[in-house]
Length: 171
Image (cartoon, rainbow, N blue to C red; front, side, top):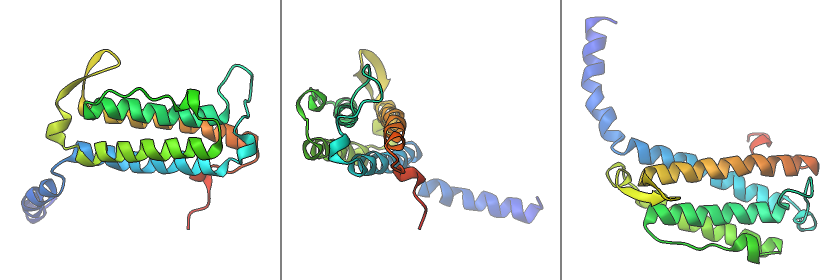
């Protein structure tokens, strides 16, 4: 790089950092936006008649899987918000409409947690599954959990000949 380019880059750095005042929480929000959309679209794509589908007897049905994602969202985002949650969608919701409503409720609940998070707030310690963690870690754990089970959703959809949301053609 020439001296002028280095000087221009150095002068631009404060502006770049000012734009990313909360880079960790911004990353968490961006990842959440992607996975919540995929989880919900995948839940909507599966026909109600297939919500009881299990690829093998030992695993959750599709409906139980989606309800489990909703329960995970409530539990983990509750930890990030400092609110104890006792979700039970997987044990109590049986119809597609009930399960999607529970998923939508959990997404709205998590949206508030992600929206309120700043990097400074994210460094505060909480208990998550009996371990000391930062609040921002809870949000990344939530994204990880939702992604893990989106992978399951994709498998179930593909077994039924349905293209998952993340594989749909881009517009």
